[in-house]
Image 1 (cartoon, rainbow, N blue to C red):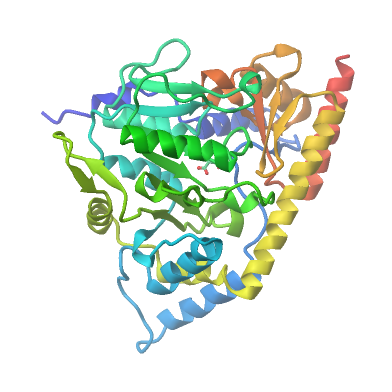
Image 2 (image 1 turned 60 degrees about the vertical axis):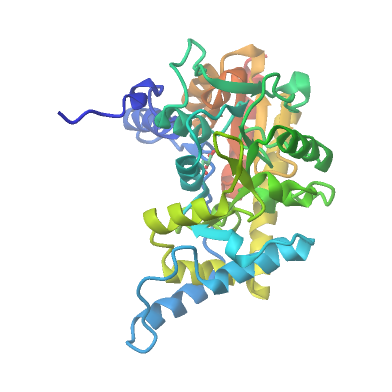
Length: 413
Ligand code: MLT
């Protein structure tokens, strides 16, 4: 008898974004002429930068002749890419990360779930609430939680609420936790962490022998020089933190797939008796066994994002999306909404008008204004009464969405 992993049966309905897609598809089927503007999932809309396209073309041509053809590459990533990441993302900021501490992969979402393979099931996990749902669901899948309650919160997890009342600053857990997920710039709230705030977490982790999973997928959108782009800007963080980064949002790789995870050699986990065990060889073993590496043309494309032209083209892309974020912030505030985030992040987080629920606001926006956003409650109980809009649209749609929201709110006053 083939039994199943029963923990999957504890998962709530569908994963958030497919559920949104289902509702939008139902709406579009009944309203085939509706001009729906999608600002839900944080998916990029602008084409790949020319420097990246050119590098990928060249790499494909290399694959077309016997002399330059390549088969399997190193599972951890080609050295040309790992060295470029080391130099352009860390050493340039005074962070001493070695190339072999960088593991190239096909996505931060996958890595954040895969990391759980190498940690004991008894670890107590803390997440912010609201939170990127993958952190929670992957812990449910491996069996680290009990069932969900009426609010969708799973027993066994420690939820740290972030909301306007606490200025989106999570309090330290009141009970000891072993694994802590932090995402900054934050998805979904679009808020950022100061260096002092990250230091508080690093100090906590050092004191409690915990490990932080630091998701920095949106670091490229930080323009404030005072805001850290890597947790390793905090002294001692290499002893307690794994950092996840991606080419998805800055270089437009959501469909191309390339990311990387930094596992410092100084990072220690512990055996049940308390003796330290380096995490790096465990992750290296896991990665080499279960992953065959990112394709060569994609890694060449990713490396081209660090060329002078690539950097400049990516800066233009970031400026483009952050201009959308600015327009959204200003437009929605002008329409009388309470708006957060969107200054150093491509997400704008707003309080739903008239205290209506997040899903009711989702339906209202879809049915009355043909705009798709993401209901805050889909990210956790503390997201109830909030709503996320993504700045990854094109300019025309962003302007049109603001116009429609203004008109809809004005019609209700
Ligand atoms: C989001 O909309 O939260 C992200 O696009 C999801 C992701 O990157 O997987």
